Length: 129
Image 1 (cartoon, rainbow, N blue to C red):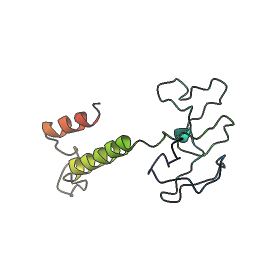
Image 2: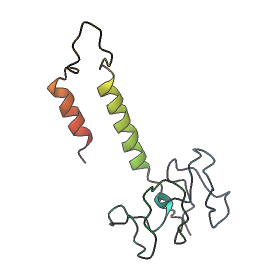
Image 3: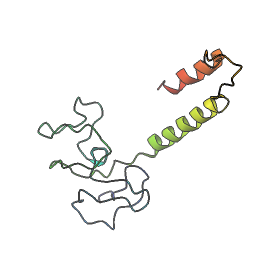
Image 4: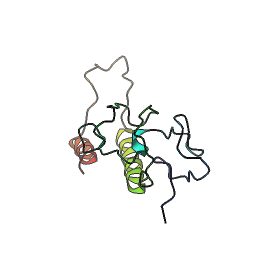
């Protein structure tokens, strides 16, 4: 029994699409292009070309439709943990920068905003794995 294809971005079912996926196929839920490296079985972020297929062309934009002939959709492309981590990071960034006033009044010198050391600690924590 094979695992059904899901959109790499939102996890929506792709069972209504015919295989092989066409270059311009999109997810019906999030409208992301699907013939992309992130959706491919050969995609590997730890490989120098981000692809384990040695003959595949180097693709720089991993989430844009491409013409790679080695593309094979992966049933494991969607990982809810990475989506949750991305959403949590965006929430933390929004919270962190919510209090910064970006407009300087005419009486203030433009020396930049004053940051508390705890702000930088929070920023550094966002980039830790």
